[in-house]
Image (tube, rainbow, N blue to C red; front, side):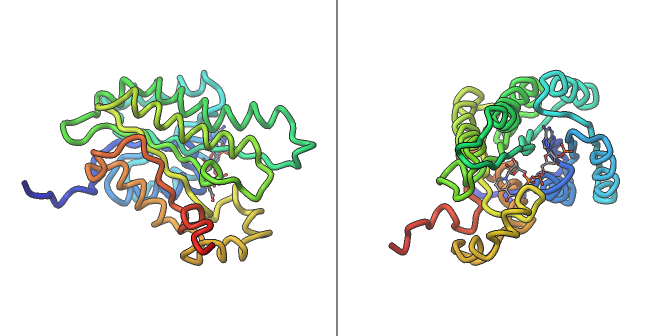
Length: 262
Ligand SMILES: NC(=O)c1ccc[n+]([C@@H]2O[C@H](COP(=O)([O-])OP(=O)(O)OC[C@H]3O[C@@H](n4cnc5c(N)ncnc54)[C@H](OP(=O)(O)O)[C@@H]3O)[C@@H](O)[C@H]2O)c1
């Protein structure tokens, strides 16, 4: 048996990225477009969708569809829209996420409803809705993929008081394993648990604790677009067709080397 040279190709694949208008989702959209994939991005704000799609358009075929993943009717409309345009969906990336920070005594119940809905319920609903379209993309030796963007906050206890977020991300990781078991072998389901990346979601944390975070990270820096794109391309290409139910930390060692020196 020989190995092939196109192991990491995503060329010609159709990819849906929720929350693709900024931050990690936008980095992923750019990375997939540069490698010849056709990309759908979505987020709540129509203007953000239009402006991100216009910026990305010179790189390839990109379509933006507004969708609040916290609203089941929006999730249905998003998948209906893609079903009307595409015969198959190769990769669903559940990237849209929401967080909440507050001291334990003041942490509101509403922060549980919102954060669990966006980070756990929505990825499940989108997997359920997109399943027929994903099944159609499944090929011999290269199954369709679902990629959930979790967080290292779901792997280790964070220093920030984001109780519903850390719990939701741990839930998203376990949902990944459960869906991997249910949808195999035609759809592989994996998660990436990012460490610190410079996005709007992390802006305040980086401002307050950026140096601390860099110091605590084995490789001594925060993440850049190639770090997250490299992992997502691997988990969307034939290179990972024997991998499902995995949660891959992409964090420069922030979660994986904790306590290593003790
Ligand atoms: N940045 C990090 O260091 C880091 C670390 C670990 C994990 N993560 C995870 O990575 C993912 C992306 O985070 P990010 O840092 O890139 O965040 P971000 O900069 O805040 O971007 C979030 C994206 O999701 C969209 N979004 C938010 N709520 C949504 C909803 N209800 N429905 C649809 N779209 C929604 C936003 O657009 P609209 O506002 O227009 O909806 C935006 O496009 C999240 O799952 C996050 O938990 C990030």
